[in-house]
Amino acid sequence: MSKPSPFPPSSSTPGAGVVHLTLQPPFHPVFSTLSFSYPLKLVVSASHKIPSRPSSSPQSSSSPALRPSSVPLLFLLSYGGGLVSGDHISLSITLSPSTRLTIATQGSTKIFRPPPLPPSTLPQLTRQDLRVNIGAHAALWLAPDPCQPFAHSRYAQSQIFELDVRGGASLGLVDWLCEGRSARGEKWACESWRGRNEVWDVTAPTSQVSNYETAVAKGEETENNRKKCLLLRDNIILSPPDISSRVDGLGIFGTVILVGPLLSSLAQFFISEFKALPRIGARDWSSGKSQESSADPIVVETEEQRRARWCKRRQEREKRDGVLWTAASVRGAVVVKFGAREVEGAKVWLGDMLMEEGTTTREFGPGGLMCVK
Image 1 (cartoon, rainbow, N blue to C red):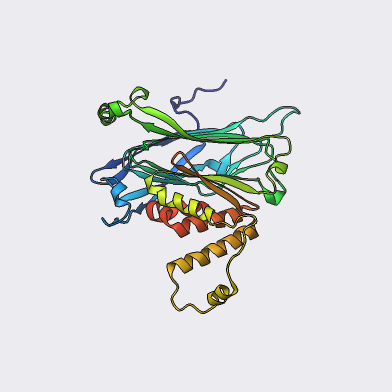
Image 2 (spheres, rainbow, N blue to C red):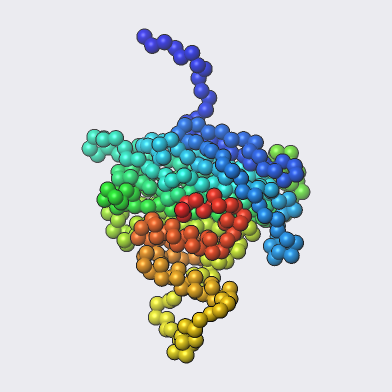
């Protein structure tokens, strides 16, 4: 007969986590709540100091009166570097007004294969659910490493973001997955993979703005005193048979979602670069004379010349690495879809785009680029 445990029963739910970032006077971000339970692990790293913005900056008119002094870096981890069959991660994140947060991982999230099962028996589903609430003038940059589903694994994730769009909330999301363990010959050999991203505009009705702001100040905000509007829903469903034949040779693909004023410059950068891509049937109208003049040595290179040279090199790399991508504006958000033959090619492309534009490093710190290292 087993002896009773001397420890009291745990009241925590396995895989549950709660994060609440607030702003203490004058501008110092603090985690008022940070809790997690196995197999989820949350680790806070060094914060990024936000550079002061001059009053003449074109974005200063849309910037909040309260500007945090730094951006915390939060690592989203799991024991063993991945999730086993049957694991369920449920994470809730709240960003109070005028806060910012960068979330990264320290490697790909592996979805391990289940143990041997009897024939015709499906393995347990591995789940990961994320719900984020972003207050006025707050911003989140969520850029994990690619998800790596092993052969025969079953995985589903749901990521729901609620933003105070009228209050100037911002969101940057990188969501991508690869074919599996390519070194072991796995090419989209998972049993199933399902992903859903939703972005909601959570705004108070115009006639109730004063009452809504009072409710938020008192901590009495409810579904009844705010208005929700779906901005976009992005679904990915991979299921048998023969997943690999339907991805057309891609070893990785993903989505970038950009919403809000803090990331408007980056969003516009993706749109403008996509418009500048060569089109099928396009003709090179440059004359021999212009080509000769471009070969002349340049003593001082202008910014426009440097950008054109960078763009040409990037497009050559895209062709070499088999990178395909598109960008579109959807209800005030910019959605970028991309894919490549190998993980390294996708990381190089995404890293080039983010580092060239500069918003991610400047506003969220170098931790925002860990996924492309």
